[in-house]
Length: 392
Image (cartoon, rainbow, N blue to C red; front, side, top):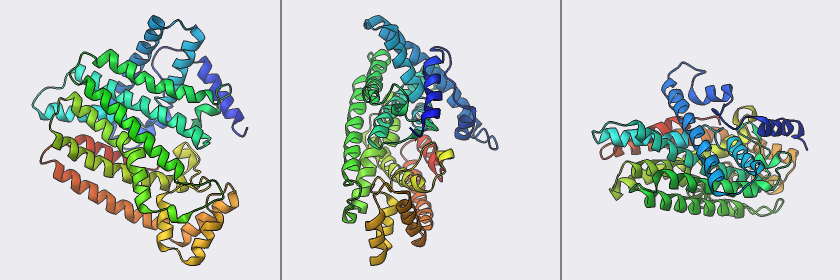
């Protein structure tokens, strides 16, 4: 295996790190995500992330205690679950989880109330539930896409002695969400809304994943006619926008006892647009991103994916250009991938994306400004600022 040495190291860490205490995140990754490596303007985000991480350790200990109390499992099984959680859940940018906290603060302070420590803790718990959901999706997605790395480390299924066991591990990660919700929210008036929201968003995202997987035929069998903006935005809406953007905001709104459906509809409209923009960025980064920065190796071209890049290329392609795509797209061949990228360069797809990004960002800013008339928008601004011109 081409990742044997790095996977061995990761496997060693997975099975030798202590199972208690604060979960450590690579300092360089943390600095890049929080802005601490720059001018210090995002120090408050770094502080919020540090507090957020403390709640993760509380939840891990709670989940370990739940396993001890309710299940007759050997220590090795409980250790395995905890190590899976620590490997898969806390190593992303955590923007989804932090957005729950930010949105809750906006709504409670906007109502004239003081934000309590309990408010922050419960919002952080919900934020971690979103991160558990993200981990569930990514572990499964990496298997389906035959990905190699994720977040700068080997994909979980690539680790020695893990393999396709990771399918069940992803299911466990999802179900831990409901263990956490029951422990902290079963006596809260918003419990049913929170449960329903997680179920609905998970179902929606799974349908989006279905569309993504079935939008492509087998490698080498390319149907360029199926690569349309309509299909692309449908995938974006269902696969990414609901869980990455609407879910964190809606969770915080329920926690803050927001009842006005118009406010939920407004938030959803902006969040879906933000998710479409975010996924277009993902397509761009898959092709042009630096794996040492992104933490993963892009495979969309060889995987025959319907992406913003190929749809835009088809929009301006000549018959000869289209023939190049038909002969080279969707094939696991390094030379053919380079040919597709060369065609993208000829068609100035990179420049077209930067123009798209500028235009779409302006559209979102305008929508958020209008929303300020009826609702707090700090969390929406937080999310947009975190993703604008991102490189990972």
